[in-house]
Length: 468
Image (tube, rainbow, N blue to C red; front, side):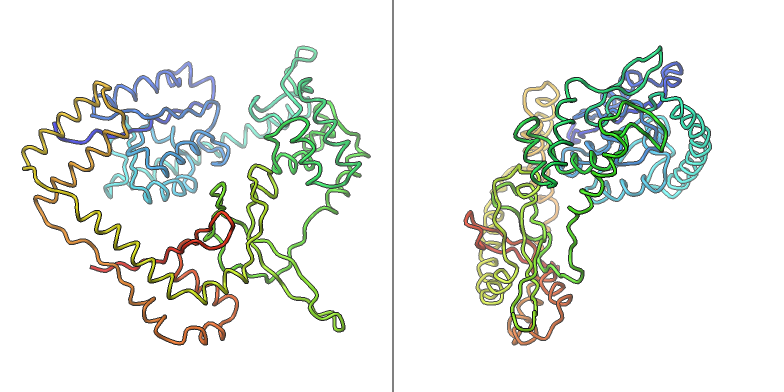
């Protein structure tokens, strides 16, 4: 057998205890899908389980889906298996958001108990949309009923969410035979220290660094914002008494006033030319735009806007050590002075890569290649080789076999747009552009700007226009 083994992700989900009784448990779904994968020449590379999550739940709250999508983007998955489409989604909007990502990375899905529902045929798509519409209506009807029940539970102080959704400083507990939210003794000291330090020093960054250095190195700016805005910490939920408070109502109002004073007001109209193009040379994170105004004429008070790029993992979360700010003016000046040189060097790099590809030997016959593919499948099924080795070798063999059948010419890179631009007086053209059009100018020709460890530009990747 020369067909390539598919890497499959198994997605399983249950939302209520009722499903456990009806045979839809996580274990039952997992066993069924694992058997299906084995019978269809697939190898499971991951099991992604959402327990206690409804398919109508906000996409951002379904952690297993996000973990699965990260592996899709990393190229680890070929196909996704789930038992029924209602295990995957019952929300049309979120379904198509995720489907866009799958399409972009060439990953398909199989609803194993519903072979008629698919994205490959017209009838399959019709059935899919009908099922999603019906499912969404059923869930919306149920959610309205649950909403009334939850509102009653909140008024009674009953816990209505899981342990994983607890705010920092709280956990579930039993009081007078009722499950409710109580203070977590292991985090109580940190929460009290957080509010004391913030109220005394009145600085978010200082408070963030204090908690990271004294209590939790992983404490993030996102955690800080949540603790300064969540009403749980004053003991209420949706305006109802709900849990033991960390601060009084009066103190909470005082903390809110301090927090609002710390809000950074970003001037409107600031244009960042290179957003998303520059990565931190230390951690690889995309640099974010930041800026300031500086007085350039003391007599008139005239100010000038300055734009910079910084690593927020260093400046906000304190995870990276790169606190350097890259000046937009310096990047712009360098590119305008060296655009022709950088472009010529880029073409040389691309040509070298292409020559290495073309130097690969092709000596075996089709029959020999297929025998090697069968042997490779057998080795992988017996766990003699890793997936990385198997996939790399199989793809190479498949490429070699295809090259024997049809000689497909390598797509030629079309540099005519950039070359035509560089032959003109592009500096004069650029000078006449508005800020918005300057940003468009750079986005049309530059793909990535690589920095050296000293934060100067190392080399530039250009946008490639391919033609046959």
